[in-house]
Image (cartoon, rainbow, N blue to C red; front, top):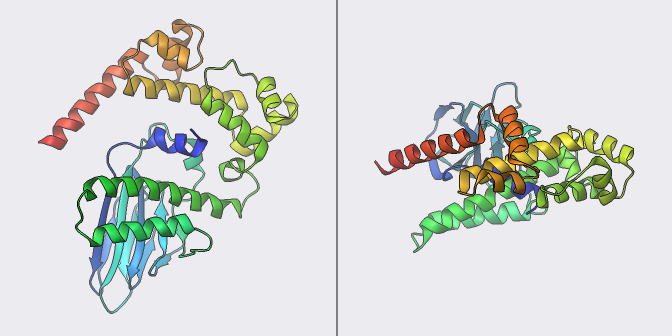
Length: 291
């Protein structure tokens, strides 16, 4: 799996939300902080989106805006007629956000640019088409399209950021050397990686690789490797019943004891307690949803 897919996969929880909203003239709405990401797409008229300490963004038909951190904001219809727009949200795990997301601004404007974001525009068109027609299977199609849309929204954000800065995840993912080492860590976290072996895999000397990786990713190579290994371990604890020894092995630890110590340092609780706690939370969520 590629790095962006992994980053999204480790943070996504629950089902995404989508609705087609209508706003009368003089309509205004305060939207509170949300534990996830929100997005809006203009379809008719103009909607102004304002977040604290950020520039005001006005959505016209085809324009999109992403709030990757769920920042509180205000929506206002700035036309004399009814405005319509898509409103969507994704629940994200904020306790352990992937650093790729941390580098994104609170409010990201993505103007309608079919030449620059063809995948994003195609995803939006498919969503609008699906919402406009009561077709069989839409309960499966809409969540799938929303997942695709999230990837295209993040891709577009990274493209925008890459034009404004020389380092960071938006640049690292397109840097041939650093991207090669990141893919290796994500695809084979259990390998006995060292700074030297990662540098050799990327085609650089140990020192040159360490400097370049740290400058772009914002963490030294082994710090990120440890972070990712424990993220993999947490995901295995949440989604499988494999014994702790197997979790340790798959996440790159030579013994269950070493893994247990590392996991507790990172998460503040034991791996067994973490698994039990997650199952309790998941069962509560399911019972609440079904009630």
